[in-house]
Length: 120
Image (cartoon, rainbow, N blue to C red; front, side):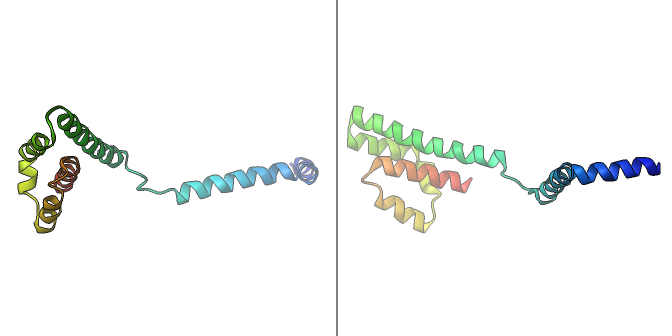
């Protein structure tokens, strides 16, 4: 046993970088495990927010198509009909913002989708 320890000591003196590298990698692994965030980015939350933004984009595109086909006034009426429920649920500040956006049906549709998504 003593002979083995002497040989191991001589080997470590010659190849000191190997045990040092092993110890360094082990230390980094332990450090990574200990400091890893337990509440990392929630995939479900990211997917939900991306879905909500997709709804906003789709609402704007739908209003643009309607505006191109039927005209500004009918697009405005369509937005008011389609998002009447969301518009009724707005608080005072949001209602002011919606009132300011009534001339632009695309911006109004996007705003109402975002406001409806924030409420739910």
